[in-house]
Structures are given as C-alpha cells and as structure tokens.
Length: 317
Image (cartoon, rainbow, N blue to C red; front, side, top):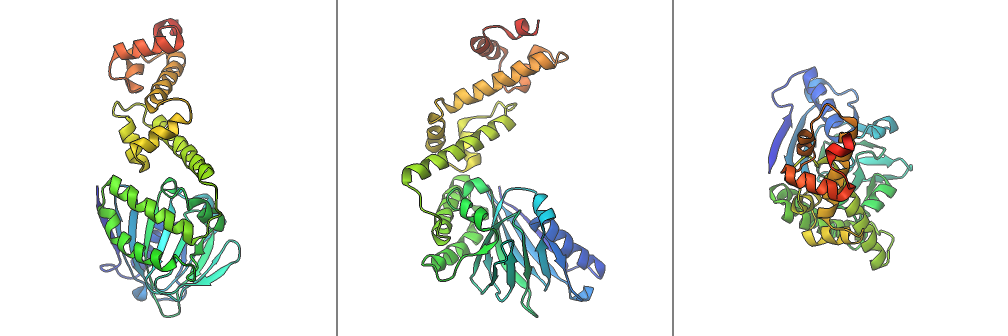
C-alpha cells in the first residue's frame, strides 16, 4: 500500500526551521547536520517520502549543510536498509570511512547502508537535491556485499553500466512506490543486477552464487517465521511476498535444507509450544495453542504428540 508524507519548512519560522532540518536528517538518514553560519530564515527543507510495498523513495530538497554519520551514529543505525542515491544537483563532496573522497555530478549514483560512516558537504551556494531509495538489504542479494564492503561510495561514472543505471533509477524512483509487491520485487532484482555489475562485484561461479542467495533467503524466511508464529495467516505465500521472491524460489531454499516451508512452520510452532508448556504454567494448553498460531486444538494436539511423543498435558505434568 502506498503511503505518502511530506516534510517541509514552508510554514515554519526561526529556529523551528533549523530544528526540523536536523530532526529530519537524524530520523530518515541517521545523520548529524552542521548548518554553518546560516541564518534560520535561509534554512529550508522540502522532502517527499513515498513508502511502497517493499521499499521507500525520498525526494530531497534541502538548503546547504554539512552532514556526518560518525561511528556512534553508525552503531545506532535504525535498520539494515541499503540506500541508493540518484543525485539531481552535483558538486557536493564526500569522504567515506576509508578516507576515499569523491565529488558528485548531476546523474551520479551513490550507494551505502544506514550504518556507513561518511562526511558530506553541499557545493558552495547550492542545495542538496537527490532521490534516495531505501531498500531492505535482503532484496539486493547480489550487490549488497559490494555495498557493505565498499562503504559509502559513488558508482564510478566511467563504468559501462553507469549510464544505464542512472536511466533506470530515474524511472524507478518515480514508479517504485506505486508498484505492488511482485512488481516491486522484479524491479528491485533488475536494480540489484545493475548495481552488482556497476560496482564490479567479485565474480562468483553461478553454482556458488545460487547457493549463497538460497542460504540468505532461508535465513530471512526463518527469521520471518519466528516473528510471526502466532499468526494463523503465516503461509508460504505470505513469506514469499515479504521477502520479495517467488514461491518457487522460496521452496527451493527450503529444499536445500531438507524440509518444506510448511514443515519449518510446524516444527517451530511445536517447539515454541513445548517451551511455553514447560515455562508458563499460568497459560492453559488452549491459550498456548492459540498464541502459537494453531487454528484448532485438534490440529495442535495431533501435531504436538506426533513430534514429541507425549501430549502437552502429559509433558507439563
């Protein structure tokens, strides 16, 4: 579902403009802002945030400033999302944690994570103008290792895929928020491939790469299952939709682990129920069955005994 919001200093005055710019930088980008000697009336921000089914896009227009994400802020990063920037007004300079420096131009693509250390300053007399895509790391399986390893970095403009990447991001930043989950997943897979090529990721054998991707999908799927065990609506379809993969890709990841998605859900529900039976005597067996996501007591009793060899009541006694 598309959610759109706007952050603007348009109707604010004085120090409230300064506070909004600083709070916005901290909340959305995990950054500290230095506004130099700018008078409050000259400080401005106009930021449009569109959150789609799988990722968000921010259109940022703010007045001149210096920004920094130090190591303390990096450690407190709110998520492991990756950020892909399409620069609309260039000339700004950056320095990353490795001491590497670069200057952007209109159309430059910059990438990093929300915990990447860096400093940046807008070009003298110019504003910050860019689009930023905030994407969960697991949706960029091919390019994420290069982004994490390289830190905050610019995609080299002389790489063969640079122009194509810029053109693709120009359209994607407009359309991505309106896409449903399957379409967004497909669009992000294409972005992932372009980024991987443009960043010159170290080549891997196709079999090894497929194995790494499936292992990552399995780990993310199990994490999602564990955090949604109480929901009777926890299904392979729901998991695949959340991860932005097809049902076939999801099933293939579990096949490599020697069991099906449904088996994994069932096993983890029974294991959680077993722990609750032993450690939460104030809960009835019925309450435990319901909070572990079983839609009927008969199903719970049957599966519990089949897996553990005793009923829940026998185990408790």
